[in-house]
Length: 460
Image 1 (cartoon, one colour):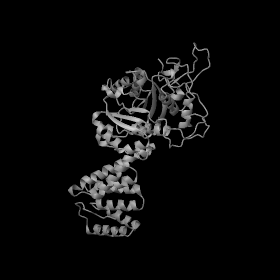
Image 2 (tube, rainbow, N blue to C red):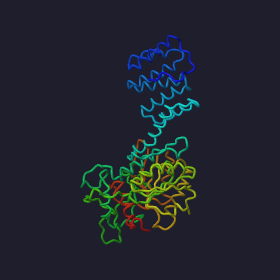
Image 3 (tube, helix red, strand yellow):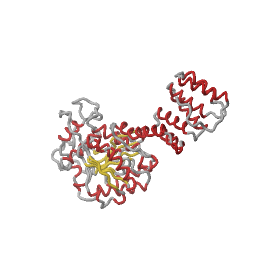
Image 4 (cartoon, one colour):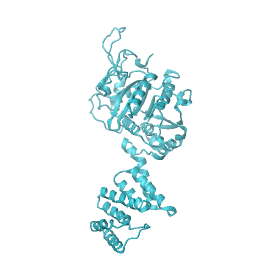
């Protein structure tokens, strides 16, 4: 056990110094329980930083991590500039899983050590940095994913809740290595869809009679919003037969079915072309690329360098998944007529893109460039967006903006804990069967596009 490296400018009395020496000897011999009472008594002297720091180490050794953190905090309060107490505080925070707090304390320890440096603090800080980079990957289900979380470099350097939730949703919905609920033959009800079942549904698609404007209503049970009924969310299309159709039986674009196809079906995102707006760290787009998609990550020019670094750090992982990643700078207000918008994509992704009305206007410009400009066959099939609720005005503004662009929007999933909602936004409603799982709905849309077929729902 380390007792001191560069004692702070304190003058312990002979008795206190003797007590600390005895406690240190006990701790070195492994008698932490014997050392702890002596160290607690020593914290009452006028200059207790060293006693608090040693006490924190002993409490850590006996796995009393909460008390160890309290002692380390008291040590730093007693002598804020001593790098040893800061390092101990960082280690206590790390033991309790507070990676950001650990990084802050260890960074301060490195600075406090001065020109001579502190190799232990530096090594600990590098370890915490690696954990921070990989934590999001573990949380979303791609353990090898590495992301630099540069909190001091503005919003684009953080992994926000909505991005983490959307990335996890993609992995749960489409990763071939994820075992999902539901046995073979369980059908395509919510929570029971696998990739092969999605593909089986798509291959049995029927030509429907529904067209834009043929009976749109908001299903409150689907939205999860009791007040939504009758509003313009356009979450589903009610079943209506076409008066011009001789067969008046209701028809669906994608029927519910009992799957019989092999369970090793290919990943539905394989070779799908995706554009991510406001990528930030790239967590959503990189996750999709690991699932086999061909992804273009975009953000403001000043964020492109960090985005490229994250793409490079995950290149091998993406290639193993069969995907690819490109990074392009894109300012939303300049999207119209840009080379990025003209390339054509199957799907557009976004997470937590707007914080105020100005952001809504800029996002609207980008969506109009993608969904309203150029040849129809090159327009994306959908905009998959994860929105974090911040205040009612902004949430309502988002809905109005999507309506203004001409995008139908339905709720695919909610994460109440983080106040995140995932929306599927298309030029028109995707299917008329609200019982189908959100992943199935999106999968059907992408499968139709992969076959270069145009659903009657998308016909003008």
